[in-house]
Length: 290
Image (cartoon, rainbow, N blue to C red):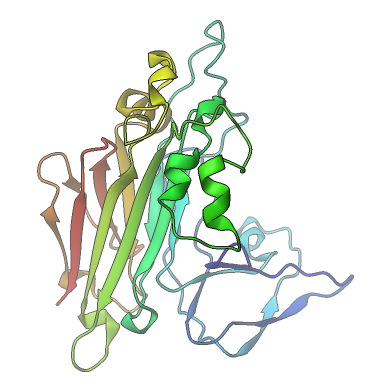
């Protein structure tokens, strides 16, 4: 498992062309549809899901055909998952060396998968920083606000026993949540999905103690986020293979100007929404299946 929502099952036996895979129960699993890319492409259309709690024999032989390469290593995505993706780059830009050529922003695509209300809300938190500044580490003021997740956690936080004394919580946390509601017949393709995107932590100045000693040039604010990932996040809302795209409606319930609903990709059964990366934007988007 890669965290909670990606299942990776490589073939570990020599000269074996098939791999037996067990899928954790209670949720369905979609075959991985994302591909590495260096352009504005999105993934492939979703294939039918596999129910949890079953075993599947997967053909993962190595073949010369390019079309089979994505299937050499079996990978699946849990229903309801929220998966971010960026373009392939040869290296990570070093923003501390102005003599180097300026690197273009690497936009973030947030892939949101169909789910079921029985799973409850799907949540994902994405952390952005400049990649080099020590001030981007979480400090005690930020850690103290987080839910306790271990023994002596409360005692460790006020003393910043996590390590870096230069930590200033100089980062951006973007929270994405999806709630699924079905109609009375329980068919998740005839219900609605509500997606929320907001900045849960805005960086230095968000009640962060000792933030005044972070140089202005080092503060990770809207300007720096736009420099690194662009002016918009791209949300790709994936639909199940049997979805009739003529019956899909995407509505912006909150967020106002700046949020753009793109054209549906009917062939890949995906809806695209563009949300500004500004920290003051709270987007609420509803997808309705009619």
